[in-house]
Image (cartoon, rainbow, N blue to C red):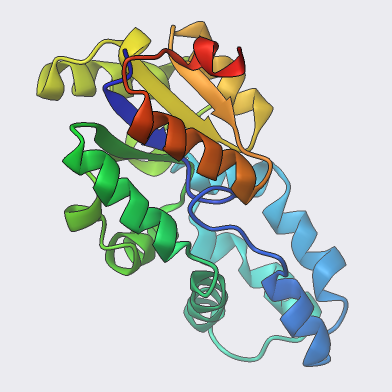
Length: 215
């Protein structure tokens, strides 16, 4: 029986149909999509999420290449403000309905310390969720066993909920596969329809396990 739901942020709670790079392209910065991909989609970004590198320092050479003349903090503030336009507040309302039904809801997300602080306030996490597990705090990514060891131990101690009673929603198969290794049920999010279906099942058929939803 599902008792706790673990929510990824990017791709689940925040689903963008356009990205900050595109806005920079419109503002005539120098090839921002290609250049910033070298930061965003490489080990540099992952190590920032892991707490090994500082994003404020690592972004500097990339900003120089695109012609950004303001500070590194102003860059991240602008990016995060842009992304906040895509927060699914209607889903957060549904999460409150789930909590009223007795589910515990937690954030499970890879984030560097700077974006973590932004999201804590913008998502009003203290009021809208029962807790959060960021990669920066764990010093481990969702693809690493350490992350799940910490998450499972904390939720078991706080709520007495076992891995087999948890459901993890994420848009990346690699993260879902790692959670599954620990006995956690998983649900791959490819669109808003996947989220809506999952929430409906949780609200109306709490006694069912996710495996039964495919019947």
